[in-house]
Length: 393
Image (cartoon, rainbow, N blue to C red; front, side, top):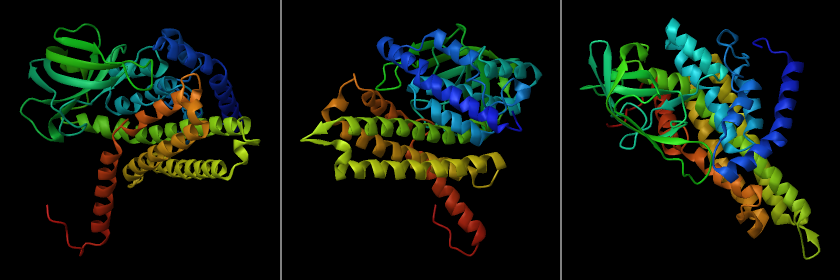
Protein backbone atom coordinates (compact mmCIF):
# COMPACT_ATOMS: atom_id res chain seq x y z
CA UNK A 1 0.00 0.00 0.00
CA UNK A 2 3.03 2.26 -0.45
CA UNK A 3 1.39 3.75 -3.53
CA UNK A 4 -1.80 4.14 -1.61
CA UNK A 5 -5.11 3.38 -3.30
CA UNK A 6 -7.47 6.06 -2.04
CA UNK A 7 -10.60 3.95 -2.33
CA UNK A 8 -9.00 1.11 -0.39
CA UNK A 9 -7.77 3.55 2.22
CA UNK A 10 -11.20 5.11 2.72
CA UNK A 11 -12.69 1.64 3.08
CA UNK A 12 -10.08 0.84 5.73
CA UNK A 13 -10.90 4.06 7.59
CA UNK A 14 -14.61 3.21 7.52
CA UNK A 15 -13.88 -0.33 8.73
CA UNK A 16 -11.79 0.91 11.66
CA UNK A 17 -14.37 3.52 12.63
CA UNK A 18 -17.14 0.90 12.60
CA UNK A 19 -15.00 -1.39 14.77
CA UNK A 20 -14.21 1.41 17.24
CA UNK A 21 -17.88 2.33 17.63
CA UNK A 22 -19.07 -1.28 17.79
CA UNK A 23 -16.79 -4.06 19.10
CA UNK A 24 -14.30 -1.48 20.39
CA UNK A 25 -16.85 -0.05 22.82
CA UNK A 26 -17.69 -3.53 24.10
CA UNK A 27 -14.01 -4.23 24.65
CA UNK A 28 -13.69 -0.86 26.45
CA UNK A 29 -16.44 -1.84 28.89
CA UNK A 30 -14.77 -5.19 29.54
CA UNK A 31 -11.35 -3.61 30.08
CA UNK A 32 -12.78 -1.15 32.62
CA UNK A 33 -14.70 -3.91 34.43
CA UNK A 34 -11.75 -6.33 34.61
CA UNK A 35 -8.85 -3.84 34.61
CA UNK A 36 -7.10 -6.04 32.09
CA UNK A 37 -6.51 -6.19 28.35
CA UNK A 38 -7.52 -9.75 27.41
CA UNK A 39 -5.26 -11.74 25.13
CA UNK A 40 -8.26 -12.20 22.82
CA UNK A 41 -8.35 -8.44 22.17
CA UNK A 42 -4.68 -8.41 21.19
CA UNK A 43 -5.32 -11.33 18.86
CA UNK A 44 -8.35 -9.62 17.32
CA UNK A 45 -6.35 -6.46 16.63
CA UNK A 46 -3.55 -8.60 15.19
CA UNK A 47 -5.88 -10.64 12.96
CA UNK A 48 -7.53 -7.48 11.64
CA UNK A 49 -4.10 -6.14 10.68
CA UNK A 50 -4.37 -3.11 12.94
CA UNK A 51 -1.00 -3.85 14.56
CA UNK A 52 0.86 -3.76 11.24
CA UNK A 53 -0.58 -0.72 9.48
CA UNK A 54 2.54 1.45 9.26
CA UNK A 55 5.40 -0.98 8.68
CA UNK A 56 6.70 -1.47 5.14
CA UNK A 57 5.50 -4.41 3.10
CA UNK A 58 8.94 -6.09 3.16
CA UNK A 59 8.53 -6.43 6.94
CA UNK A 60 5.01 -7.79 6.59
CA UNK A 61 3.18 -4.51 7.15
CA UNK A 62 0.67 -2.64 5.00
CA UNK A 63 3.14 0.10 4.10
CA UNK A 64 0.76 2.98 4.84
CA UNK A 65 2.66 6.31 4.71
CA UNK A 66 3.13 7.94 8.10
CA UNK A 67 0.75 10.92 7.65
CA UNK A 68 -2.01 8.59 6.38
CA UNK A 69 -1.36 6.14 9.22
CA UNK A 70 -2.01 9.03 11.61
CA UNK A 71 -5.50 9.38 10.13
CA UNK A 72 -6.16 5.81 11.25
CA UNK A 73 -4.59 6.30 14.67
CA UNK A 74 -6.80 9.35 15.13
CA UNK A 75 -9.86 7.10 14.78
CA UNK A 76 -8.47 4.34 17.04
CA UNK A 77 -7.68 6.97 19.69
CA UNK A 78 -11.39 7.70 20.11
CA UNK A 79 -11.62 4.25 21.65
CA UNK A 80 -10.30 3.00 24.99
CA UNK A 81 -6.80 4.25 25.78
CA UNK A 82 -5.42 0.72 26.12
CA UNK A 83 -6.66 -0.17 22.64
CA UNK A 84 -4.95 2.93 21.30
CA UNK A 85 -1.79 2.01 23.21
CA UNK A 86 -1.62 -1.45 21.63
CA UNK A 87 -2.05 -0.06 18.12
CA UNK A 88 0.35 2.82 18.69
CA UNK A 89 3.22 0.82 20.20
CA UNK A 90 2.99 -2.12 17.79
CA UNK A 91 2.99 0.24 14.83
CA UNK A 92 6.06 2.06 16.12
CA UNK A 93 8.71 -0.16 17.70
CA UNK A 94 9.82 -1.56 14.33
CA UNK A 95 11.03 1.95 13.42
CA UNK A 96 13.63 1.78 16.18
CA UNK A 97 14.76 -1.77 15.50
CA UNK A 98 14.78 -2.17 11.70
CA UNK A 99 17.61 0.26 10.75
CA UNK A 100 20.01 -1.49 13.15
CA UNK A 101 18.85 -5.11 12.91
CA UNK A 102 21.04 -7.84 11.45
CA UNK A 103 19.54 -10.66 9.40
CA UNK A 104 18.59 -12.75 12.45
CA UNK A 105 17.16 -9.80 14.35
CA UNK A 106 15.21 -8.75 11.28
CA UNK A 107 13.18 -11.94 11.57
CA UNK A 108 12.22 -10.90 15.09
CA UNK A 109 11.26 -7.45 13.79
CA UNK A 110 8.94 -9.14 11.29
CA UNK A 111 7.32 -11.11 14.10
CA UNK A 112 6.83 -7.88 16.04
CA UNK A 113 5.17 -6.29 13.00
CA UNK A 114 2.86 -9.27 12.52
CA UNK A 115 1.91 -9.30 16.18
CA UNK A 116 3.45 -12.71 16.86
CA UNK A 117 5.64 -11.16 19.55
CA UNK A 118 5.19 -8.01 21.66
CA UNK A 119 8.21 -5.76 22.19
CA UNK A 120 8.18 -3.22 25.05
CA UNK A 121 10.19 -0.01 24.71
CA UNK A 122 12.35 0.01 27.86
CA UNK A 123 14.15 3.30 28.41
CA UNK A 124 12.68 5.18 31.39
CA UNK A 125 14.32 5.00 34.81
CA UNK A 126 13.19 6.18 38.25
CA UNK A 127 16.48 7.91 39.09
CA UNK A 128 17.28 9.46 35.71
CA UNK A 129 15.65 11.09 32.73
CA UNK A 130 15.14 9.30 29.45
CA UNK A 131 18.26 10.23 27.51
CA UNK A 132 22.02 10.33 27.89
CA UNK A 133 21.76 10.24 31.70
CA UNK A 134 20.44 6.66 31.91
CA UNK A 135 22.14 4.70 34.68
CA UNK A 136 21.41 1.05 33.89
CA UNK A 137 24.72 -0.55 32.93
CA UNK A 138 26.18 -3.52 31.13
CA UNK A 139 29.56 -5.11 31.77
CA UNK A 140 30.99 -7.16 28.93
CA UNK A 141 32.71 -10.45 29.59
CA UNK A 142 33.47 -12.28 26.36
CA UNK A 143 30.24 -12.85 24.42
CA UNK A 144 27.99 -11.87 27.33
CA UNK A 145 26.80 -8.58 28.80
CA UNK A 146 25.87 -8.52 32.49
CA UNK A 147 23.00 -6.09 33.00
CA UNK A 148 22.45 -4.11 36.21
CA UNK A 149 19.93 -1.39 37.00
CA UNK A 150 16.27 -0.49 37.18
CA UNK A 151 13.59 0.54 34.70
CA UNK A 152 10.12 1.80 35.53
CA UNK A 153 6.87 2.91 33.86
CA UNK A 154 7.53 0.30 31.17
CA UNK A 155 4.34 -0.11 29.15
CA UNK A 156 3.65 -3.81 28.36
CA UNK A 157 6.74 -4.60 30.44
CA UNK A 158 4.97 -7.42 32.30
CA UNK A 159 3.34 -9.29 29.42
CA UNK A 160 5.76 -8.54 26.58
CA UNK A 161 7.94 -11.15 24.88
CA UNK A 162 11.00 -8.87 24.59
CA UNK A 163 12.23 -5.67 26.18
CA UNK A 164 13.89 -3.25 23.75
CA UNK A 165 16.17 -2.10 26.53
CA UNK A 166 18.68 0.73 26.73
CA UNK A 167 21.70 0.80 29.01
CA UNK A 168 25.28 2.03 29.03
CA UNK A 169 28.67 0.39 29.22
CA UNK A 170 30.05 0.46 32.75
CA UNK A 171 32.31 3.47 33.29
CA UNK A 172 30.93 5.56 30.43
CA UNK A 173 28.89 8.76 30.44
CA UNK A 174 26.96 10.59 27.78
CA UNK A 175 25.42 9.13 24.66
CA UNK A 176 28.57 7.47 23.29
CA UNK A 177 28.50 4.60 25.78
CA UNK A 178 24.87 3.60 25.27
CA UNK A 179 23.66 0.27 23.88
CA UNK A 180 20.30 -1.08 22.71
CA UNK A 181 19.49 -4.70 23.57
CA UNK A 182 16.65 -7.05 22.66
CA UNK A 183 16.23 -8.86 25.96
CA UNK A 184 13.79 -11.80 26.20
CA UNK A 185 11.23 -11.59 29.00
CA UNK A 186 11.71 -15.24 29.84
CA UNK A 187 12.77 -15.59 33.46
CA UNK A 188 16.40 -14.61 32.99
CA UNK A 189 18.64 -14.97 36.06
CA UNK A 190 18.73 -11.78 38.11
CA UNK A 191 15.72 -10.23 36.34
CA UNK A 192 12.79 -9.20 38.54
CA UNK A 193 9.49 -8.05 37.00
CA UNK A 194 7.14 -6.10 39.27
CA UNK A 195 3.59 -5.43 38.05
CA UNK A 196 2.96 -1.70 38.57
CA UNK A 197 -0.33 -1.42 36.69
CA UNK A 198 -2.54 0.45 39.19
CA UNK A 199 -2.94 3.72 37.32
CA UNK A 200 -5.35 6.66 37.22
CA UNK A 201 -6.28 5.95 33.62
CA UNK A 202 -5.34 3.74 30.69
CA UNK A 203 -6.76 0.83 32.69
CA UNK A 204 -5.87 -2.66 31.51
CA UNK A 205 -2.47 -1.86 30.04
CA UNK A 206 0.25 -3.51 32.09
CA UNK A 207 3.21 -1.46 33.32
CA UNK A 208 6.34 -2.83 34.89
CA UNK A 209 9.15 -1.97 37.25
CA UNK A 210 12.20 -4.01 36.24
CA UNK A 211 15.22 -4.82 38.39
CA UNK A 212 18.35 -6.41 36.90
CA UNK A 213 21.22 -7.85 38.93
CA UNK A 214 24.05 -9.29 36.83
CA UNK A 215 21.46 -10.52 34.34
CA UNK A 216 23.27 -12.26 31.47
CA UNK A 217 22.39 -11.04 27.97
CA UNK A 218 24.28 -12.32 24.92
CA UNK A 219 26.19 -9.68 22.99
CA UNK A 220 24.35 -10.95 19.90
CA UNK A 221 21.19 -9.36 21.37
CA UNK A 222 22.64 -5.90 20.77
CA UNK A 223 21.07 -3.75 18.05
CA UNK A 224 23.72 -1.81 16.16
CA UNK A 225 27.11 -1.05 17.67
CA UNK A 226 28.19 -0.01 21.13
CA UNK A 227 27.39 3.70 21.30
CA UNK A 228 24.30 3.44 19.08
CA UNK A 229 21.82 3.07 21.94
CA UNK A 230 20.35 6.56 21.90
CA UNK A 231 20.30 6.61 18.10
CA UNK A 232 18.02 3.57 18.25
CA UNK A 233 15.83 5.12 20.96
CA UNK A 234 15.52 8.75 19.96
CA UNK A 235 15.63 8.86 16.18
CA UNK A 236 14.00 5.58 15.36
CA UNK A 237 11.14 5.55 17.82
CA UNK A 238 10.64 8.65 19.92
CA UNK A 239 10.55 11.27 17.17
CA UNK A 240 7.66 9.75 15.17
CA UNK A 241 6.12 8.38 18.37
CA UNK A 242 5.75 11.91 19.75
CA UNK A 243 3.81 12.87 16.64
CA UNK A 244 1.69 9.75 17.08
CA UNK A 245 0.97 10.58 20.72
CA UNK A 246 -0.01 14.08 19.62
CA UNK A 247 -2.49 12.59 17.14
CA UNK A 248 -3.84 10.28 19.82
CA UNK A 249 -4.56 13.41 21.84
CA UNK A 250 -6.54 14.76 18.90
CA UNK A 251 -8.55 11.56 18.58
CA UNK A 252 -9.38 11.50 22.29
CA UNK A 253 -10.29 15.20 22.21
CA UNK A 254 -12.65 14.52 19.31
CA UNK A 255 -14.34 11.82 21.38
CA UNK A 256 -14.68 14.20 24.34
CA UNK A 257 -16.17 16.87 22.07
CA UNK A 258 -18.60 14.35 20.57
CA UNK A 259 -19.77 13.29 24.04
CA UNK A 260 -20.16 16.93 25.08
CA UNK A 261 -22.24 17.77 22.00
CA UNK A 262 -24.49 14.76 22.49
CA UNK A 263 -25.07 15.66 26.14
CA UNK A 264 -25.65 19.34 25.38
CA UNK A 265 -28.28 18.42 22.77
CA UNK A 266 -30.02 16.06 25.21
CA UNK A 267 -29.79 17.80 28.60
CA UNK A 268 -32.47 20.38 29.37
CA UNK A 269 -32.49 22.90 32.23
CA UNK A 270 -35.07 25.60 32.89
CA UNK A 271 -36.84 24.82 29.65
CA UNK A 272 -33.78 25.05 27.40
CA UNK A 273 -31.31 22.56 25.99
CA UNK A 274 -27.74 23.18 27.12
CA UNK A 275 -26.80 23.50 23.44
CA UNK A 276 -28.91 26.68 23.27
CA UNK A 277 -26.98 28.44 26.00
CA UNK A 278 -24.24 30.86 24.85
CA UNK A 279 -21.68 29.74 27.42
CA UNK A 280 -21.99 26.11 26.27
CA UNK A 281 -21.79 27.17 22.63
CA UNK A 282 -18.60 29.08 23.49
CA UNK A 283 -17.05 25.95 25.03
CA UNK A 284 -17.92 23.87 21.97
CA UNK A 285 -16.58 26.51 19.57
CA UNK A 286 -13.31 26.83 21.51
CA UNK A 287 -12.92 23.05 21.53
CA UNK A 288 -13.47 22.86 17.78
CA UNK A 289 -10.83 25.52 17.10
CA UNK A 290 -8.38 23.95 19.54
CA UNK A 291 -8.68 20.52 17.94
CA UNK A 292 -8.40 21.82 14.39
CA UNK A 293 -5.27 23.86 15.16
CA UNK A 294 -3.48 20.96 16.86
CA UNK A 295 -4.41 18.57 14.07
CA UNK A 296 -2.94 20.89 11.42
CA UNK A 297 0.40 21.18 13.26
CA UNK A 298 0.57 17.41 13.72
CA UNK A 299 0.25 16.78 9.99
CA UNK A 300 2.96 19.38 9.33
CA UNK A 301 5.23 17.51 11.77
CA UNK A 302 4.36 14.17 10.12
CA UNK A 303 5.23 15.46 6.65
CA UNK A 304 8.52 16.88 7.98
CA UNK A 305 9.43 13.51 9.52
CA UNK A 306 8.57 11.62 6.35
CA UNK A 307 10.68 14.04 4.27
CA UNK A 308 13.62 13.90 6.68
CA UNK A 309 13.41 17.68 7.14
CA UNK A 310 15.90 19.41 9.42
CA UNK A 311 13.13 20.74 11.65
CA UNK A 312 11.34 17.39 12.03
CA UNK A 313 12.52 16.93 15.63
CA UNK A 314 11.44 20.41 16.72
CA UNK A 315 8.07 20.05 14.99
CA UNK A 316 7.58 16.62 16.59
CA UNK A 317 8.06 18.04 20.07
CA UNK A 318 6.07 21.19 19.26
CA UNK A 319 3.12 19.14 18.01
CA UNK A 320 3.06 17.18 21.26
CA UNK A 321 3.23 20.37 23.36
CA UNK A 322 0.27 21.87 21.52
CA UNK A 323 -1.78 18.67 21.36
CA UNK A 324 -1.58 17.61 24.99
CA UNK A 325 -2.30 21.13 26.24
CA UNK A 326 -5.26 21.22 23.87
CA UNK A 327 -6.48 17.85 25.17
CA UNK A 328 -6.44 19.12 28.75
CA UNK A 329 -8.56 22.13 27.82
CA UNK A 330 -11.01 20.19 25.66
CA UNK A 331 -11.62 17.37 28.14
CA UNK A 332 -12.03 19.82 31.00
CA UNK A 333 -14.71 21.77 29.12
CA UNK A 334 -16.36 18.57 27.93
CA UNK A 335 -16.59 17.33 31.52
CA UNK A 336 -17.90 20.71 32.67
CA UNK A 337 -20.67 20.58 30.08
CA UNK A 338 -21.76 17.29 31.65
CA UNK A 339 -21.91 18.98 35.06
CA UNK A 340 -21.93 16.61 38.04
CA UNK A 341 -23.04 13.74 35.80
CA UNK A 342 -19.62 13.71 34.15
CA UNK A 343 -17.92 12.84 37.41
CA UNK A 344 -19.58 9.44 37.62
CA UNK A 345 -17.95 6.38 36.02
CA UNK A 346 -21.23 5.35 34.35
CA UNK A 347 -20.66 8.17 31.82
CA UNK A 348 -17.93 7.70 29.17
CA UNK A 349 -16.59 11.23 29.64
CA UNK A 350 -15.27 10.19 33.08
CA UNK A 351 -12.99 7.60 31.49
CA UNK A 352 -11.95 9.96 28.70
CA UNK A 353 -11.03 12.62 31.26
CA UNK A 354 -8.83 10.18 33.23
CA UNK A 355 -7.19 8.72 30.15
CA UNK A 356 -6.33 12.18 28.81
CA UNK A 357 -3.89 12.85 31.65
CA UNK A 358 -1.48 10.14 30.50
CA UNK A 359 -0.49 11.94 27.30
CA UNK A 360 1.01 14.72 29.41
CA UNK A 361 4.05 12.56 30.18
CA UNK A 362 3.93 9.84 27.50
CA UNK A 363 7.08 9.98 25.32
CA UNK A 364 8.43 12.85 27.42
CA UNK A 365 6.78 15.62 29.42
CA UNK A 366 6.00 19.00 27.92
CA UNK A 367 8.82 20.42 30.01
CA UNK A 368 11.24 18.14 28.12
CA UNK A 369 9.58 18.92 24.77
CA UNK A 370 10.02 22.66 25.38
CA UNK A 371 13.71 22.12 26.09
CA UNK A 372 14.05 20.24 22.78
CA UNK A 373 12.24 22.97 20.85
CA UNK A 374 14.14 25.81 22.52
CA UNK A 375 17.48 24.13 21.77
CA UNK A 376 16.47 23.72 18.11
CA UNK A 377 15.26 27.32 17.84
CA UNK A 378 18.48 28.71 19.34
CA UNK A 379 20.72 26.45 17.25
CA UNK A 380 18.89 27.40 14.06
CA UNK A 381 19.11 31.11 14.87
CA UNK A 382 22.85 30.94 15.58
CA UNK A 383 23.40 29.02 12.34
CA UNK A 384 21.58 31.64 10.27
CA UNK A 385 22.76 34.66 12.30
CA UNK A 386 26.37 33.79 13.22
CA UNK A 387 27.13 37.26 14.60
CA UNK A 388 24.54 36.90 17.38
CA UNK A 389 26.23 36.78 20.80
CA UNK A 390 26.00 33.31 22.33
CA UNK A 391 24.48 32.75 25.76
CA UNK A 392 26.82 32.10 28.66
CA UNK A 393 26.96 28.43 29.70
